[in-house]
Length: 451
Ligand SMILES: *[C@@H]1O[C@H](CO)[C@@H](O)[C@H](O)[C@H]1NC(C)=O
Ligand SMILES: *[C@@H]1O[C@H](CO)[C@@H](O)[C@H](O)[C@H]1NC(C)=O
Ligand SMILES: *[C@@H]1O[C@H](CO)[C@@H](O)[C@H](O)[C@H]1NC(C)=O
Ligand SMILES: *[C@@H]1O[C@H](CO)[C@@H](O)[C@H](O)[C@H]1NC(C)=O
Ligand SMILES: *[C@@H]1O[C@H](CO)[C@@H](O)[C@H](O)[C@H]1NC(C)=O
Ligand SMILES: *[C@@H]1O[C@H](CO)[C@@H](O)[C@H](O)[C@H]1NC(C)=O
Image 1: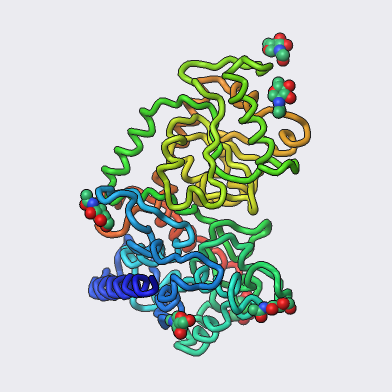
Image 2: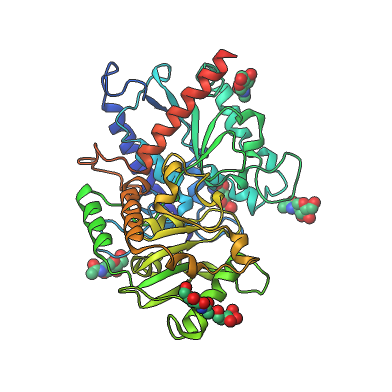
């Protein structure tokens, strides 16, 4: 098995090199108006910071073999041989996906002095595995020091020009995994974001902390990576046309033990409405409107049961009006984006599940136009029933919300790399993340140069 991983990496590496030389031979006019204020320089890092970390993908201690997820530059294998857009994507591979996409960013420069932002192609989340699970578990504060050492010694003028404020990287995990206080071993997480050496960089994470400083959360990748606008639009048409026969759906695990929490409440409520034999029966006081034939459905994803198998949950999500997105170990979930992709209106139970996280991609001021908010305390402690809240929303309002959700789809997907024809006018999650990072960097540089 180790050798299959090895060949995969050799292949990946070859493709990367091909791509890099292709990019370098493409010279965008440095006076281009289109690229003004948007130039990105990709810092060349030793392969120990990225590709070497993939070589041992099948034998990281206490961590599953992730070699299969590396395929297609981090998109994973296709769900079926004939599939163009659907992959078995692991969200932790966003570092690879991002790296591949940036190589076709239209405003790359080979001159760091001209750059508005400097991208570090460091696979920080993969490098973190040995600190989270492996031999470096008692050395959290060392995560990142090697990188900083390189940046301060190899062409140090690139870092020094703006004290690192123009540097950014992707860290494809919740920021929590990188923000343990220094000298606090052995607890969960590395201290990368706590190191003063990296206070000035911008980190794009899957989830940000309560009071984020360096980081900004960007969408978890879903399994949908259409190669063309046409394929995206035909998916959106399908989402719009589908019959929603289930009122609400929860795809996930947890909540099985009796301890009170939101997942437990969801499970109880869902089992009750189901065993009651449908709406109105068993004391439930609501009317089932129109085409709804099922009140609640649970897709059991416990013990990783849905990982890398999007068919398991995408089909039920397509058939549901509302998708429940309760917090778990951390407040955010990939499922939020799978649900949006299916046109399923998200129901959140705390603001930190999305509203205070994904401001670049999900417009914070319009949250109640495309999502429902039910404070979890109301459900867990005060007996508020989710089904009562959802059935009280008028049908016309549900339709309006769903249309808003569908409008968000292009913003939260990561399109497939490669042929970028047709995408110039559509911005996907990657394009929005790059714009956001450049904006953030500009504002941080202007703040510090005034002080
Ligand atoms: C991969 O693992 C082997 C055995 O543990 C080790 O000898 C080798 O140095 C590792 N390779 C890289 C690139 O980390
Ligand atoms: C699909 O792919 C698998 C594995 O790559 C291969 O064994 C199989 O023959 C393919 N099937 C078709 C119909 O191409
Ligand atoms: C980490 O520290 C703990 C407690 O100090 C110790 O039990 C454990 O063996 C150490 N782990 C490693 C991999 O050194
Ligand atoms: C971060 O920026 C401050 C200026 O705001 C600077 O003094 C400090 O040296 C920078 N940190 C690093 C590691 O470059
Ligand atoms: C199911 O719902 C009925 C009516 O609302 C309620 O009386 C009963 O306690 C519920 N059962 C459970 C297990 O929550
Ligand atoms: C059901 O709803 C009706 C109308 O809203 C109300 O009058 C009635 O008391 C409710 N019944 C129960 C059991 O909650």
